[in-house]
Image 1 (cartoon, rainbow, N blue to C red):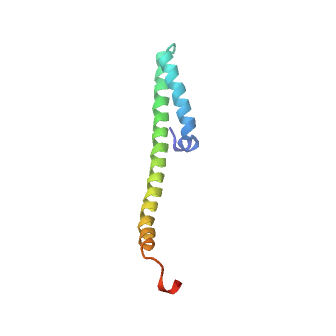
Image 2 (cartoon, helix red, strand yellow):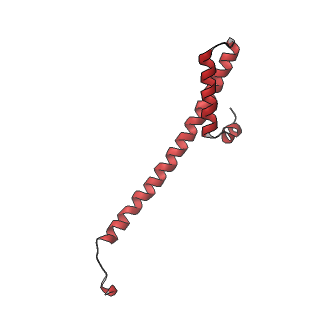
Image 3 (cartoon, helix red, strand yellow):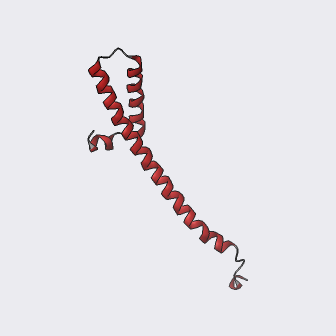
Length: 87
């Protein structure tokens, strides 16, 4: 599968097509060559899904890391009480 096709295919689209490929393989009625082509397409689609999920996981991990880094600053300021100049 070319990189351009991977970029153009979203997770949901790849997942839906993969479900269709699996259904067609499970149903049978295809020639050996058709089955092999479906299998290869399924492998490509599974790779796209895996890449999309890995990318989403990385984005979530980065967002959680930023949130965790910001929490100690907020907690440090919360326990000080009013500043002497605020009275």
